Length: 546
Image (cartoon, rainbow, N blue to C red; front, top):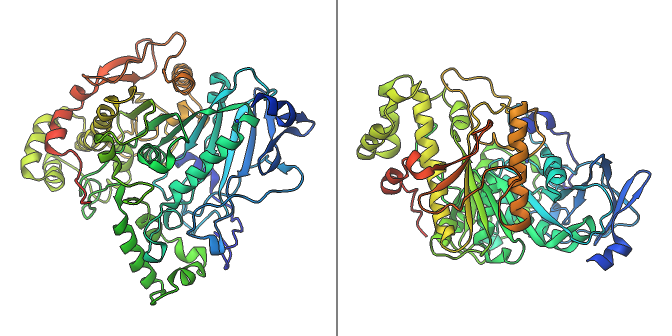
């Protein structure tokens, strides 16, 4: 949270809790590259030198500002360059996380508006190399209202894959996706922050041993939706060269009453005019309803006044309909209007179990009748009959597992495959499904009877980042996944030494199933296994009016 003038004083955040929930030219290098001193390696960035830390096989440079603090009069302005600094800036600890509410704990806002920082992890040693390393830029998840870059430790990717990894903070909730007529619409500050970070990478990657001409953007959940938006955004042209989309496709959507009886349809991308209208109504509720000077009034408010659960979640949808994101991203993909870069995309097998587990007590599915009622409420009576035929409750251990399977296929897996088909008409496209149903639960959520989490949303993350211990077979899977991901970043071909080949998505939809064990990595027909013909016909997402 920030002080009364929005100056950005950091308030201690619940790092332990949030970590569980939630993840640049050779000649110049000779003069200005990384140098190791007794206190850590020093790298000269375009804003000034930074001193990192070495941890054996890798080095980290944390809390590097990639833009000026968006505080005070800069609140709800596009990111501006950070000021230069004198002397060597310490980069041994992360910068403040962006203002947000605790996820699993009660309490008020944590973090700071002064939060536009990134973290660099690179293999240890001199930055001067005959061949610079690929750069992977990570956009964290959290629904666009929580999360941070420093929650994800990418040392496995950096060391095993010999890549430079950059994790990024971006403004969240009402600070990142607010719109208002005085702003001229809904500029999408969160995505603008991410673009500013990518421009920083283009200017500075060489200094860390990275290749600014080989940048992969990757992200999970809201981070994946961000990657999708950059694929469709003319403003992001030339800022990246490959993309990995994890559990958040351009077509992701959830039907009404999927998780709570009174919940509407969830669509992560909305017309900018809707966001602008919401902003005008919010300003009025906050006492800033006036003929002019609304933004001045809102910028004078304390961050804590703005960081309410209602406003943080109300402004967690990505607006489209202006020059930076002209078209709803899934429609842009269908029309072939996206950046021509190789793409890997996928889901976990049991995505929706994580979300259903958080609402099942309030909206239970105790028996077959409750399952049928929920199906009819979400999809209508006619489609519900087809859904019950394809997903009979008797085929599952509990009605809750049956419903979670329905939602996973309808909201995540089949929309991802639709996007993959659209992408695959123009660029090399690879699909995966994370299948380890014994993956460690690092969420901190209490167990829910009748609904084991399995391979739930986000459960692939410990296989790419250092988040929680893995059993030995899972460690081997993690090594192979790191190999696939970093090989894709290096060449556009996801190959791993000694691992099965990863085919193009193609028709039928060939997904690479990722699970531990001798035969755990194999190719499966995603469309057939997840009834995508049914969903394409009966519920292909929701057609938002332009």
